[in-house]
Each structure stands twice: as structure tokens, then as C-alpha cells.
Amino acid sequence: MIFSSIYANDNLNYYPAAIAKAITYLTQTDFGAMEDGVYEIDGRRMFAQVFHHTSKPAQECRPELHRKYLDVQFWICGEELFGVAPSHGVGACIEEIDERDLYFYDGVANESFVHATKGCYAVFFPNDVHRPGVCLDNIPLTYRKVVVKVSLELL
Image 1: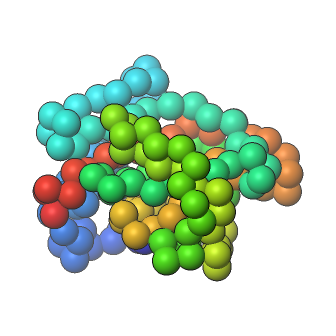
Image 2: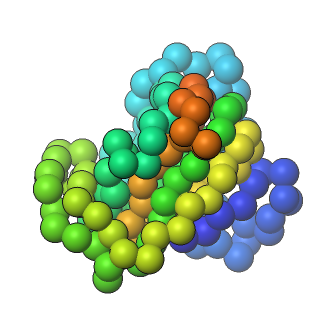
């Protein structure tokens, strides 16, 4: 996992080109002028999902993995906690949504939680189990987020 902020002035030359392209898209796009939905960046090889969400208690959020894409998640406004852990501690797969490259698990060992706020981004690789949408202090908050899906073929 990579975790940073667009305000950190990271040198994107250190990242693989596809990840740098996704982060550049996030920094140069006016999401305030966009409706929630799916936007192609490079066909189905790289696309953005823009949405509003309300966080929930951790026990109501399921750990997930992806097999064909990595996620570059970006917080437009608001905040959430997300869990992350190495995939070697993942439990049993309880739901598979192949067409969305989305696989939910019944638990994960050694999970840590990160507090993401406006401008933060996180890159989740296929070996990073992540649990998005967790509320802070058990208080549900509404936030707006973009998830850029990057095909592993681009790496």
C-alpha cells in the first residue's frame, strides 16, 4: 500500500507510470463539476468511480481484495478510516463479484486502520486487503471519494 496526500508534493517519477497517471488525473480533475458515476481514463484499463458514501462501524464493513486491478483511492471531501493488512492473514472468501473484480472476506489478521481526509490517496495492490468506509469514533460521516481502477496489465 502507498498512502500520501496530493498536498505532500510527492515526486510521481518514483511511482510506476500507471500509478503516476492515476494520481495526476486525481490532482487535475475538477470533481466538483462531475456527477457520481464511472469515467474512463484509458478505456477499461483505467477508469474512475466517483461516489458519495456514508461511513459505518468496522463490523459492518467487509475486508476486500481485487485480482485484476489495483485501487487508487482519493478523498475529495470528508474523512473515513480504512483498514489494511497483508493478504496472508485473510479469512474465507464470502462473496465474489467477478465482473467488478471484487472479493469480500469474513475477516483479516493484523489489520491496521488509517485516517484519511480531504486530499489523501491510497494505492491498494492485489496483496493489500482493505476495509474501506469505516467511521471515526462510531459516528457515521458522509464523504465523497474517487476510486481509480488500474489494470495490472498497465504495470
